[in-house]
Structure formats: C-alpha cells, structure tokens
Amino acid sequence: MGLKNEGSMVFWLSHEHKDWPTNSSGYNFGTIEQKEISAEAKKHPDKTIEIKLIGPFDKTFVFQNPIPPCDQRGLQVAMTWKENKVELYLNGKPVDSEPVEEPEK
Image 1 (cartoon, rainbow, N blue to C red):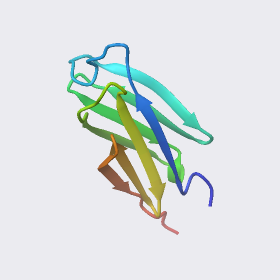
Image 2: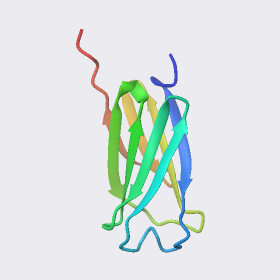
Image 3: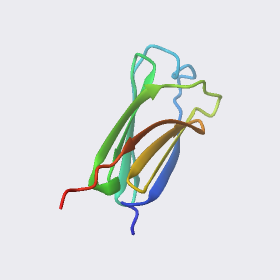
Image 4: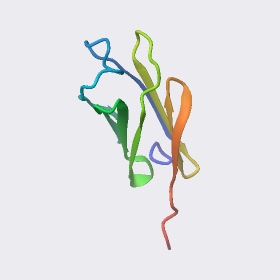
C-alpha cells in the first residue's frame, strides 16, 4: 500500500518566544520530511496555524485552524491518512479533516 496511501506524521512546534501561540507575530517553522511525505508549518498573526501536508494520495492538503491552548512543550501536530481521508489533530484533539476524491477512470 505504501506511505502515500496510509500513514501518519507527528511533530511538536515550539519557538524561543514562549508566547508564540498567542502573540500577534507570524512564524515559519519550516519543513518536516518523512520519506516521500513532507509537512510545512506556519503560524499566522491571527493566531492560526497553517499546516501543509504534501504527498499522501499524491496530493497537497492545506489546513488552517486556531491554535489551541499550549503548554511549555508547544503545539503537538499529528496527521493521519488512510481510506481516502486526511485528518489533522492539534494537541491530541481532532480539529479538521479532508476527504480525498477518487480519481476518475
């Protein structure tokens, strides 16, 4: 089946500015890579986090959600993909999902 059709990615986002989740600054956390899958994370001044997931189902998925309360570790981001659906979790709670259209034959 391969990682492109079923898999997961989990990582933490933190910054030297301890108030980064709640301040009005924007931050680019860069790219995290896992074999043929990558994720990009950006915090926007409106206190939302944008996660771009590239690779599952040979597509790109972009999620933008409010940042939930964070502790000293930062923000835990988890994504899973299988059965034609990508799900986003922030600090262990499901916050967004996107179905994947089957390609027409």
